[in-house]
Length: 262
Image 1 (cartoon, rainbow, N blue to C red):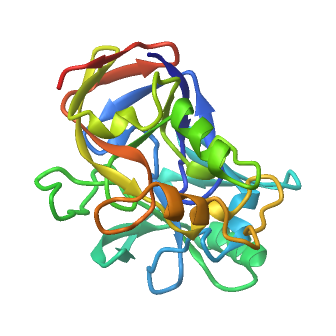
Image 2: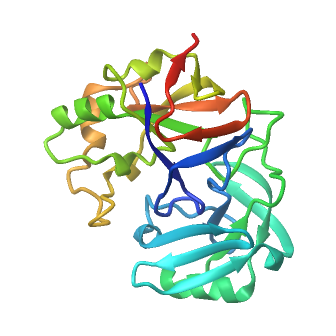
């Protein structure tokens, strides 16, 4: 089994930034979910409700991040301009983050049609999440990294009455796989030379029904409904992919082999 795709999401809930290699840190892949867009009170904004997030792409640069709207307009947020800390919130966890310059926030607000802010996690994240302490976490929902399998996707597509694409599942690591859903039984693996530990299966939500091309939510809630009918955890929640916690640091690359340790 090999890695076939690596994705970063420099700004949470925006388009994927596909790379050939990535460096693994305790909180996940470097540059992944390092930024997020929030309401003025620091509450995170998600593409579950705001379609405009899927019209934004983010490109890491040495001095910050370039944000591009799908019509080609661009804005640059520089690390040096994040000078004020305020409280942020992601799924009930509250922690300090850095607020972008007014010009950046104004540019984003114009595209959202309301006042929003860009937040940076900072040089060192101060976000602590239950079951992941003492390591800090990025702006990711609950775990550092998400792995999915092309074989599992093929099974979901066989069940689903509508076409399904991998981009809907917003994974960091995509592998070819051997059998559908075999990854759910792994407890420790190595990708290249970097070791990871299984955290939990990824429970899915309505976000997977937003198509990356049309940007619309599927009117019949697919493939969420298909997963709900065919593949759930013990609590009846639909699952696809696994969350991983890095146990070492290092580079992983497209083409790296997967070694099952446990």
